[in-house]
Length: 144
Image (cartoon, rainbow, N blue to C red):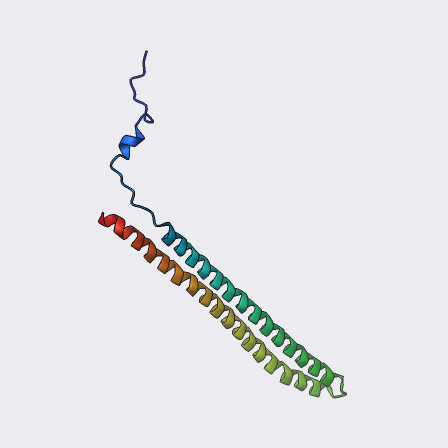
């Protein structure tokens, strides 16, 4: 007994796409767009690398400054003095060190944020341009 249901995969693709017309694809424009995408990615990457190097250099400077401060404190602690004088020295030393630590932390965080924002802006700008290019590729096709 034959099955009365028709096969859903039994269709002629050529009939389905007979009236569908492809316009010539501009390969050069597509390559140029991809080249610009890669250039933007490379530029954003270079910004990130440069920023990371600058942050590392600045952190090394801040660490060196901190160790110099600790070294001065240790020198001061090795000089003979009363307990009250040591407490006063430690207090006088710690307050500016805490303020410097907070200031340095803010500086590093601000620099890192700025670096990330610059790299993201390059990618955002290129993504927007890329969408405009895609719209321009499609515009002539819609007009035909």
